[in-house]
Length: 430
Ligand code: EPU
Image (cartoon, rainbow, N blue to C red; front, side, top):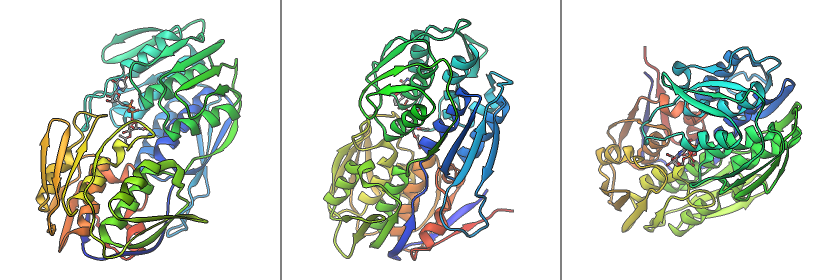
């Protein structure tokens, strides 16, 4: 298993490029199941999760051709995927595949809408919480599907197709909104989705579905009105920039100090996170090509915040903010309201000397004068990258084990950071 080694204390300067958003690329790839025509996606990031999903989609019969293959090292341009699901050859998503990546459960809606049936393994829990799928099932039932649970699988049937309906989510869910939106695009008649998640990645998928022939009103709001089409067409779509990667590098610059332009980043996708960062004393400016983040010598101010669905402060940046606040001049409070167990990084940050008390869903972080490098363990994607941020601030060497978690969601992380002056390298095992 690869490890990442960081020697902290070096400021970051220069520029780095932001990749396409993982959490848009995944549902966009899944949307290819909705049409027999070719869906071309540009700016797809090269990530382990994308490759896992590609294997799952191939299993259903999707033909995937990749162009723009890069010879290393290359400029940070995403890949172009051509996905064609001419015939769906298998409507089962097996346990071995869904267990590897939760978002693969989202094939349920498109398979059901296109083929009238789907058998998809329940994803089970994961490091950040139990993560049920009841809201996905609620949406499919509302659209007319019959649902059984058999041998750990969701077996869904709609032999006469899905029918438009009113779906009112009792709780905001990104995945269930994706599921409902994709299924409704091929359902008969109109669907109203209320209390929909408003994450920009949902808007990106909605825009792609519109290009494919669905009619969707209310994009970017919590009420989506979808006029289903009897068939959807091929389309060409560019994946929007990754706001979580953007925020992560912004926090990294804040942590290490320095001045970096995040090329291709779009400020409007992460206003709350950037405003939070500004409150800590970090300067943010929009540039013609992205966002510039700088902190030169100033102390970090503590912060009190809670995670919220978009447009609130994202849970996917909670661990990174916590890493940063370990060195703030004072006490910060961070409340996690989305996932019940997303604090795996706390005990690892403590190994570097952080002072964090956990009580229920709230972490109290007392800023310390210094962190010291140590061996730490990556536990989930965002927790892992918080350890990178802490490593950049720590004195001496930090070694992060189990970095496959990082590879799920960060493309060429070591190259991007070392290009800005960080002392970071991958230690390849075996
Ligand atoms: N929930 C339910 N029932 C459901 C679905 C969700 O109770 O049927 C609950 C969850 O347990 C959680 C809350 O609703 O407490 C929100 O979960 P959501 O469904 O919004 O999460 P998700 O769709 O599974 C996506 C991202 C996550 C991100 C969350 C929240 C992708 C591929 N994943 O997950 O990203 O944290 O939304 O913004 O888009 C990551 O990238 O590291 C990651 C975990």
